Image 1 (cartoon, rainbow, N blue to C red):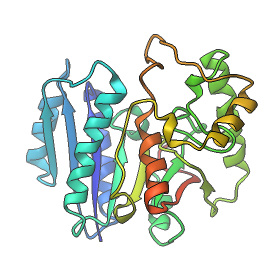
Image 2: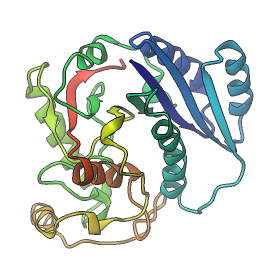
Image 3: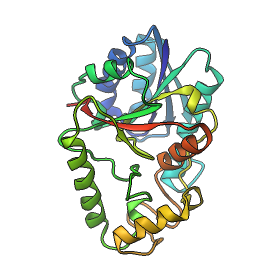
Image 4: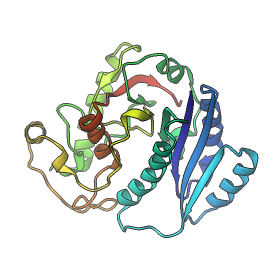
Amino acid sequence: MNCCLCGTVKNCAPYLERVFSNMEKIGTLFDDYKILIYYDISTDNTLEILKNYQKKNPKMLFYVNKRPVSRFRTHNLAIARNYCLNFVRNNINIFPYFIMMDMDDVNCKHLNIEPLKKSLERNDWDGLSFNTNPKYYDIWALSIHPYYFSYIHFQHSLFYNHYLIGNNIDSILKKMPKDKLLKCISSFNGFSIYRTNKFLNTYYDGRVRKDLFPQKYIEINKKISQSKLVYQRFDNVDGRFEDCEHRAFHIQAIKNSGARIRISPEVLFF
């Protein structure tokens, strides 16, 4: 039972040593593992760290992308994650599992490996993310009833929508028994593990993909948000053209392969 641990990096130098240490610990749960990193040109010494770490741990492979393809961040992230995904799919006989994780401050904390170890002993999930401390933070990647679509595509302030959905998911997860999993359409939260065979017919897409959702889901979301859909530009994201790349990835896996996307109320990184 092998696993490929995937990550995308750009200006991640302060966190990489501790993230790699956590990756190595996660690797002990499997018979063997690879680390696959997609590097985008950085202004810090991220590339130097990657080269030095590869000498220390030859299980790590990395690809150097020197020129972003798009002016939109989520589009570039989708390209990077799809590079990793294609590597895993081309080696499906080697990697029945893969992990996609962020390489920043979220995953450089102390690792509580037990929840991940226990998850490998159960068969009621195909894509599994985990809660974070002090609360679940990745609201942009989250799609769960009745908040199906991206929170940035509804009126009110971004802070209000983020606060509303964040409190909702935090309340649900804190009330759940630790051994139960929460069903959702999309969740990443900085770290997710996947059973590769359920993700052969999907891809990451950082565009706005309203077409992937049944209209009834959109109507439910509009009603609960008391808002029509809006497409506007913000300081750090252009909602006219961008959405979180994980949403399209997960919903296509559900549609095409019946993938079970779940959230564990347990926390991996403290």
